Image 1: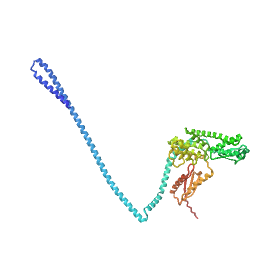
Image 2: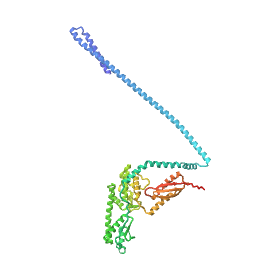
Image 3: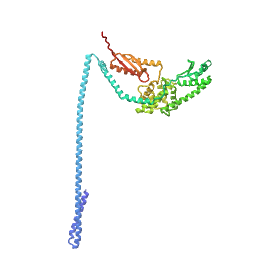
Image 4: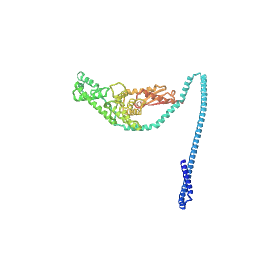
Length: 498
């Protein structure tokens, strides 16, 4: 702006000098005067234009200065307002801090007064009751437990009703749908290793001279041969595959008619190869039916052994097929990992066909599967499918599907002695609790009715007792499906009118 003003003043100065020159030359001739007037007029116009331009520049500069000043004043006001706001907030925070310090001091004082009063009351109670602090504490806890027993039973009942209301219907729908999807057209397959004799005289040929044939047959096949019935040969062995090899070999020998140690060895060896092929095909067919592929050949062959293995009379191939279909359906419904669940269901009982090592089928199965580099979740589900609390949701599904398949009507059977023992164990567990008068296991052990002494067990205690009995059964006994524990408390008053 200063440069502009300087330029204007320079123009004005130049115009003044031109005017002075004009006056000095005025005395010349008129022709010259006319010539000199024209430049003078042009100089005046330039002066006027320069003046106007200077004025405009000055006005613009003033406007610009006014704007700058207004903006500066506005920024100053805003800054001042912000400073005032910050100052007010600081004062407010300081005031709150002071109030909190005052409240804290008051609270500490009251806390100390309460603690002093508590200690004084404890001292007075000890003096009045002649009890120590620990004795009084135990007495109060006992009284509190009795007082709250009704509340505890009420809470348990309310929780059970709430769970049943929210979960029961949905779980029923999922399980029914899963069972419907896994339904198969078969009845339980009970394998009996017997071979019918077409002729009574052939029995002697089987035994051979001085029993050499039957001895050679037992040594080669690893089974016991029994002739309790004149019309059949019974083959017994804990290994179902051995038993099947022996059965097929015996049928071939009887059909061929040539029975001697060399022929027995030849037939058994050939039959063993055929059975191995049958086992592998059975394993492959099982894997294909459930949609599991690319398993190692050794593992597939081990699954094929299920064809000749039963559990409580339930064929293992059918049980595994049924369980895997149900488990996959449940996993799909609730959003669990279907692949892991399917594989775990397929392999959960693999330990039952491992006969060359000692141990229960859960430990043997988990140990055997570790060498195939399977996912850890699959192995944990196999290892925990009989535990109370599996570590994964897939393990829970395997346990549920296994229970459904094994406990459905007609799936399994057990011998009379084991059945009686299981019923007695259930009743003995219930009667081991104080206040229980009688216990009856009914519905094949799926329901346990417990009758308590009404003078010893209150209504509120009956609810707790049913839970305690159920927990003890879960931890100490093995049973198919579920066991419902029903505690019955009944009082009767009898009067006679005469």
